[in-house]
Length: 551
Image 1 (cartoon, rainbow, N blue to C red):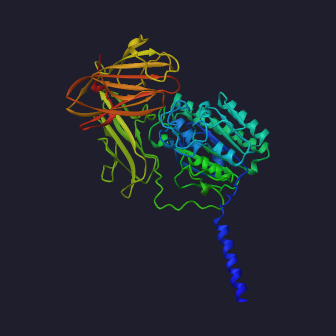
Image 2 (spheres, helix red, strand yellow):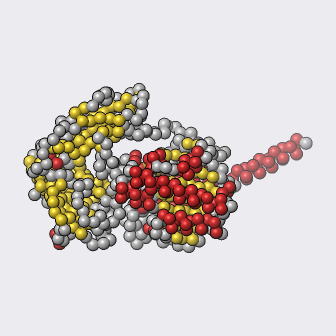
Image 3 (cartoon, rainbow, N blue to C red):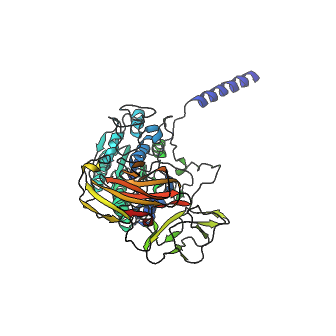
């Protein structure tokens, strides 16, 4: 009897070991997955737009308003990451004009067409009979997708056509996976500015389109077996994006439908490249080792949120600096002539202290507490944040206050040029004839009178007065390309077809006047130019007109 028991225990142990060594088969969470990516839709847009559909999906699903884009916060890099499960350093897509024949960094692995493996290919390889579709309002995403991995590929011309195509496909085919890109919110951000009423209206329209797509799953009879993921590629500030501010880098991530927890806030880091990993997990497929993205399992019933070793660093919005601005292209503070400006803060977070600095440094626990309005009598960079119990609890707001006694004799000369279509680099302005000339107070597109917005360029020329000998760093933020020259020497090269990106360069300068020249162009879409300086005892700030003299 003892011998039988012994052999039985040995046999069971062997069986358990064999079972433990077998590769586990992932559990399928949903039969159908739909990803709706809304280009340029920020958490701020959802918070301030009329979004009853997404609000309902958040209440009945799992969500985060603190997911992050990859850097740069531009469309190409992030749509690539959203379908490839890795960042640009792996898939190599860092700009909007990337193609398999136009790249600088090759992908670390490939399946075909010199492309990093996409979610479409991963599904196709593991489930050959799957129905897979892509409806792409921003057509260049098709350059990122392998051949013969989708059953249906549509490249519509606007958000309404995109929605109609998606609805028809879902109802008629009941696909396993559908990827939908909607573009008009990004267009509103570039045209009207992020955080404006027209931007919020664009988000509201996106919400209604999402409602129509959601209703299509009901009409198709698949709603009770469908997971819907809503996300974005980036947010924005002012008229652009591409930088590192939370307004540009934070994106929404909403999951709704089959096996999703209801009313659950995801309080852990989520990135753009986690999107395809979550799709693969939901479909019960194996995630490739090559992907670094992780499935957001905490959104699903039966799975706990990950246990973090450290605090999830969610910061509330910062205090508003008054006079208020409209983001990167028109920041808080402003340009004043005559009377001295008055600095105020708008408290949106009662119970916390507002601490601030006026020298451009980051606010700390020992900096002054705001109690009453403050008169500004010189060019000043203000930074502020909320504090509680000596600890910062919010993001940091920045205001640039510039003023001059009178505009006469100050500012910089400019010339406008019409350039050829589809320009991807700055033209040689010496070979072009200006269509308009004049003087503006700052090196910026804000006050330019432009004959048209697309296929346009400008050259700013004059002199900059340097207050003391030393090393000075100049920054150009632009959409599209720009360059800055000091004494005819190139200091900043920010050329190329791109969203708002900031680049810098440094130069040793002596006290006194030096020639300054800035070149800028916009090939199409949104546009902006802003110029900054920092140096000895001079915090980074918009180059003030008090330092500029026109030709």
